[in-house]
Length: 235
Image (spheres, rainbow, N blue to C red):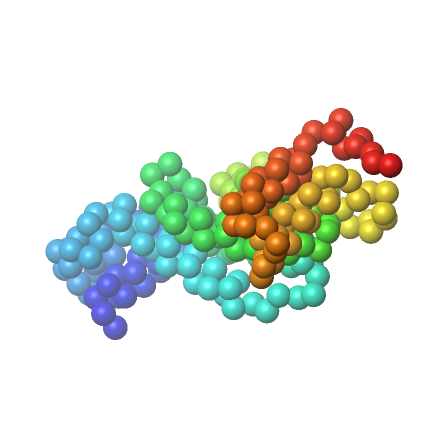
């Protein structure tokens, strides 16, 4: 095992055992059996070490999600993704606190998580059940999922309800997903979001690249149109 791997393993063990998420570089070096220069040469400082630990842990979690085979139901996959995110936070509270701390250097990791979420929402849009644009749905689901997970981790005494994450999940998904299948519920927002997603994956169209880009821009605006715009009718 390389010295970097030993340091990461030692820091991860100490972080998981720490009740307040605090560890010292001295303790990490002692656990890893390396000198302080090796740690600073590999990670720069303590913040760099903690960022690397968080990235390694969350990347392993994301790799597992990437390897998962999508089901035929994108909405079910969306719910499962929410639940696995919350489960990771509760199983790795120190990692999760650090991931969302003001000094975190893990922006790239969260972008990867957002990209995975977006891919599921694109499938929902292509299936005709997304009622807002993929961009807006991604922001809503990501912020709500991370928010409730973080509260469960940092304020467990204030949020003791074990069903809270699922309740928030269902509330958020109800605001961006239409599972009724009823034709009257196929609003302009849903139609625009669906067509945008289908254009994104189409092999070719009769439109030029610039025309497709412009059309998709219009469709995203329509998919996020406020309620009065939904009263659009055609003869």
